[in-house]
Amino acid sequence: MKRSLHLIIIFLTTSSFIHAADDGEGYQFEALKAWIATKRQVTIKERGGSLSLSGDIRAEYATSNEQKNGLKNIGNNSLNPLVATDQFKIAFSLLLDYRADSTWASVKLKFSNNMGVISGTNNKINLERAFIGFRIVDNDRFTIDMEPGRRKLNYTFDSRIEFNAIMDGLLIKYDQSSDRFGDFYVHAGALVVNDYKNLYAYVAEFGVLNLFNTGVYLKYALIDWYTKHFSNPKENDRFEYFNNQFLAGYRFVAPYIDKVSILYGAFLINSAAPKRTIFNNEKANLAAYLGFTMGEARKKGDWAFDTNIQYVQPQSIPDYDFGGIGSGNSDFPIYEKTNYIGGLFEFLYLITDNLTISQSFKCSQSLHFLPNHYKYKQYRLEFIYAW
Image (tube, rainbow, N blue to C red; front, side):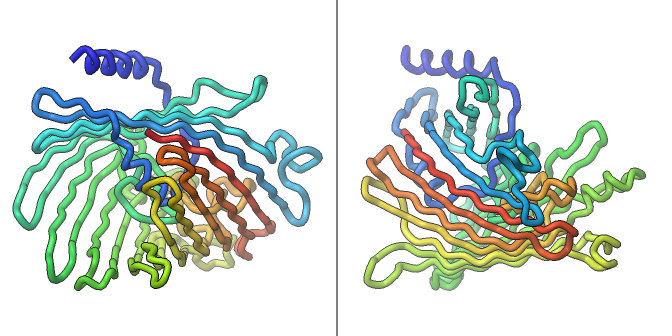
């Protein structure tokens, strides 16, 4: 009991210094997320529930190369000399989950700062997740849950290129199991975009997992950002997105090496995109990706990798929800991160049960839709200790 009170006091004291900060991270490797989710080693049971405490510390180095029309775009003697090519980060995440019979709560605090005596920061704290949940219907074959609060969209919805925005709102989940046809679900909700202007967005994902016990899964997701018309054309341009994503995957155990593998692909269209003169009075509202994942991270010596290629037109995904590779473009604020074709490779290896090393390389070049041509490359090395 004393230990429980001590942990709660520490948490409340830490929470009093929260200031919102976005570290800009997009999609994270699924195997890494699954490994961190297994770290619930400190558990406290009292008052009919179970409180689990976990966390991770990350030390990261990333080096980037960007070119604009053949000229160096970042770093010394470049078009943007104040943007560093080499970046060092230190991050700490604290996760608390409490579960009772039909209710639960989840909290994630993330402290992500740049390293450096002069260039470093020490005040970037982010309340990345804080929601409560309760079960409305608990049937043998299906359940209905409600979860008001905050989480990243990609905590619930699946995409390699979108769903990077914060979801402050209400999520409703319907999950149904079937031994023959597969597991079917519908997850839908509403989120606050700008409460000063009464602007909200709506999101939903329909899916079936392990269809007919074949390992095939299908998902359809939609998100409506264009829920209000503004008199200011720039505001309309920013929210003219009604995205529809169709995703298919096949999960199997690779022969001979006995590794869990996933082949996946998706197609996305923004059906709210208007024709633009900058695109020769055409729409540039399509995106797609194709990838392959192998391996799982559970214990010392495990490894996993993910690789995918992405094609993203400028009108397909809003910058505030973008979670893909990116292009290095900073000339068009609305289309800053999209308009590219590129590839990504990520590999992780568990040095111990708690320590992993993660490496990734991504590169892209811009499409022909905008006047300037960009090339972008980044290598990232990350050590992660999770408990």
